Image 1 (tube, helix red, strand yellow):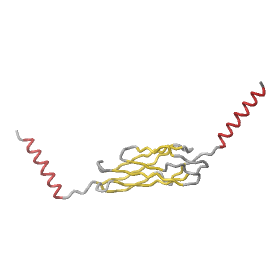
Image 2 (cartoon, rainbow, N blue to C red):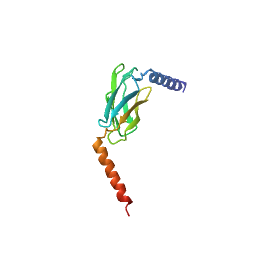
Image 3 (tube, rainbow, N blue to C red):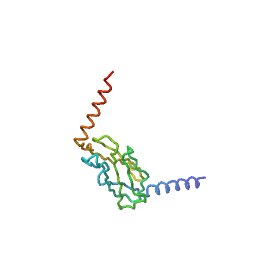
Length: 153
């Protein structure tokens, strides 16, 4: 009976040491926030590539990259990244159909790294399309006609 208890304890200790001896991946980004600055609604698609390194001692696997909005699409390296190797997460913001102005979006990265959840941020300011003076006058006249028609009994 004592031999079985000792054997089980020994196996348990070996298992614990083996678990701690296994390496861990570590996700290290060059930067976690990118500011697109000001760009026009006439060209509403902007892209930035976040670069990272696996600074751990085990292969890094990115399980998922989730954006906070459908207007932001992340694409990332699907293969395991070896220790010391670099990878990229390309983030595209599409402001088409969105109201001009400032925005801030979050991309959440899930991986097998020791820091298994990392958040990246993009921000910027999309300016409205410049209106042609003639087009602005035509719009104003249509609105005026609409108001006048609605006011008549």
